[in-house]
Image (cartoon, rainbow, N blue to C red):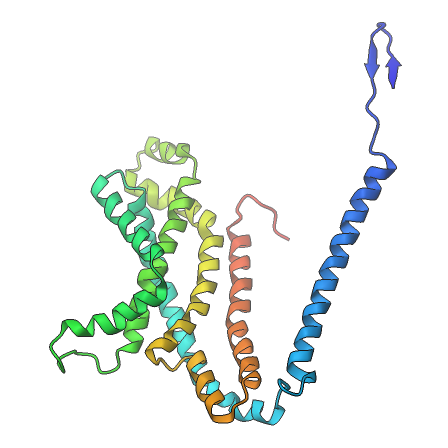
Length: 283
């Protein structure tokens, strides 16, 4: 369609969205909603069949409450490893990230090699190296630790996750415009002051989602400590299952135990992201 205007020119008029366009948008939303509900119902039905309907996998309520206290101490172990490992990995990860953006070829090269090694080898391999390899460096009977699994777990988790935190920090720094550092230097700040006062706070905001996701992964990674006989949740499950020959009841407890940590942790990370969104609108 075209409209005649006063100066004799013809202006093409653009038609608005037609009925079929709106119908397609509405249909897509309805299809998405229907698929989401169908998926949720299918998962719930499968869980109900596994946990309550199928005689071979039905939950023993009496056994559930009987063995529940046995999982409290392993849950505390997981919390300790998570809290200490996450604090140390973030602390050292900041230095790894700063080293990754260093203009010194030696500093940058060493940090790059560190990141590539600990991201390129399995965490299980690193746990085995620390737990079995480090004591072998001492003469027999002279290793100073009698209970080595806990320090070994902290060392392995810190070394591994600091590499991931370092890459998250490096990406956060790279996302900060170069003009921020230039503005800081123009105000008389040194490079170190500008990095600390201007760049790093913005980099932290940019990296927060990746760091929070890695913290959730760290919680789940504690299950690997079963290979060094650490008294964590998976080891406790194996002990209970070998005693009662009922896997599904302790499996349910395992699910609740891990979710009791990861769900609040995820909510806390989202809260921190909202608080860090300086330029956004908060509800």
